[in-house]
Length: 232
Image (tube, rainbow, N blue to C red):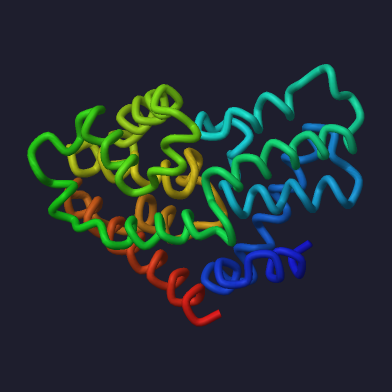
């Protein structure tokens, strides 16, 4: 499965490294088993979704089709559930990611181009301002998912930022942006070790400096992924 993820998402896997991919596989298999996925095909597909949408995609309000399918009592057979999940994800990717992921790649470029000053500007951390930023960065995803689905995401970000030392306006705005870009469980996602390193291991107590450091690392990650996409 580790080898498969390196083939499925080569640039992302290269950026995060073999150990992180291995941890992602281990946790992803555990999560897949909770939904009755034990056969090789469904488990492999579940890991592909983890790679695309984050470890906690199954509970992410941005992807309601995932939770609806995985928790459906009307689909007891794992192969049928995997097929239904494939159909739902394919529809999402067609509408939101676009042909050959053109929309998604363009969104990554816009996310990488966001400046720190945009997050520190007055009013940047209000709910409406964050939703407008989501729409500007990834209009296709915003249109397909719909604004109402992002409201609980923003609310969760506002509540979760403080306990992680990002209680300032810029920190809350950044937290919401990371949820939108990397998935709402990004803090503990093994695919993004630089996040845990910044939030838990670095001796940076000032909230704004901590947020700016995390923002810088996010930019480094996005630039590395985009560089690989442009040269592949």
